[in-house]
Amino acid sequence: MVSGESKAFSQLCAWAAQQQTWILASGVRLIPNAMLDAKKAGVARPENIRLLAVPKIPVPEDPVLRALLERACLLSQNNAGLTLHYGIYLRLDQSIDRRLLVQQLARVAQYEQMRGIEGFFKQYLWEVENVGYPSAPMEQATRLAVEKVCGCQA
Image (cartoon, rainbow, N blue to C red; front, side, top):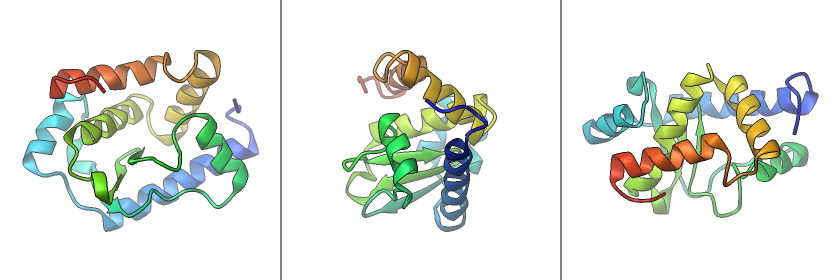
């Protein structure tokens, strides 16, 4: 999709880091039950996570970045959540959905495993481009984490 050296990739990582900073400053910590779910989903440092419930998930103003996120299936008009390392946006009308939260917590674990935003996007974008969204290993791992933690399919 994009290489690690491309301008669009760098801008995408910068946008994600900026959004994460906003969530970390404005969001709330996980409640104890969610902290347990985070650990079950594989998060190493759940105390770093912040949640921010918003009426609509923010999208980049830049159409190139927006298109990149949409192609990777990380962003759509109907997104209920978006994880940017330790910052999680949840759409207000979905903010009490445990399954959605666990899905986002599994993403946090992937960000940790990939050593942050750049590593996550490199791997995720590569998988979606080369394997396809529904079959991408990271996507499958997220679904399995939801099944494991919630006992239901993602």
